[in-house]
Structure formats: structure tokens, C-alpha cells
Length: 149
Image (cartoon, rainbow, N blue to C red; front, side, top):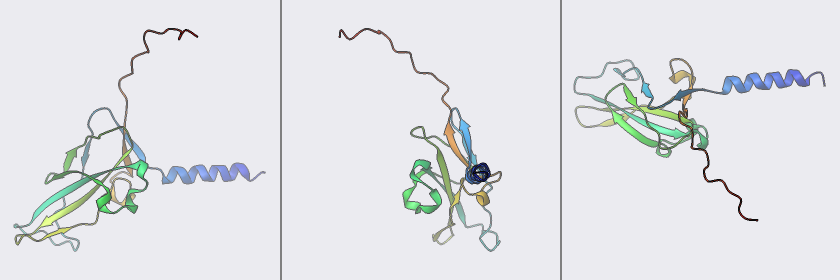
């Protein structure tokens, strides 16, 4: 019995380390990243290369996004910018998944491995998901009455 508080404390620490922070937003958050200017070997892209980013969304209720194939995500946008303003279809905790799409001068297209907002190595300040903050309150019920029973 003396070990129970110690075990409970360890469990709280483990769950706390595994959890990602939530970015709370009231309107439309903006996701930003460093532009990709070189290949995986560090060689710079050629002037004829075209770089775009595919941004995907994932409802965290569906589980760990890193365990999903890219086809399971919802494509949100394709952009050549290094940021995108997000919007979500419904209230949920959302992860973002990005990958780089490189098209060379000959029209050949290759893709990077995905980067996840939920993975420590892929983020600047630790894993995160987007979560809405309700800034409005629903109306109070009106026309209260007894049902006649």
C-alpha cells in the first residue's frame, strides 16, 4: 500500500510527458514552418525545381496520426508559402501533417516524409494540436412550461 502513491505519481508523470500541448484558438490559427531549400542530402534545389507543401488535417479522435497512411488524412491545402491559415469543419482536437512536394524541371514529382505537429522532432517548441475555444454562449431555454401531467 505504501507504494501506491508512488506508482500513481509515476503514471501521472508518464501521461504528462506523452501528452501534447493544445493550441487554443478563437478564430483561425496560422501554421508556419521553415521553408525547405535543400534535399535530404543537404544539396540545394535547382532553379528549375518547384517546391510546394501539402497540408493535411487529422481529427485526433481517430488515434495517433503517425500510424496512418497519408491517404487517411484530409487534404487541406497545397501552397508554396511557408505558412497557412487553418480552418476546421467542426470542434475537435486537430493535428496537422505536412509534406514537401518537389517537382523538377522535367516534371518529375517526389515527396518528403510527412512531418507531424504531434511529433517532438518535427516541431520547434514541442508537440501540439489545435483545439477551439468557444467565445459564445448558447441561448438559455425559453417558454418554460409544465407538460400538463
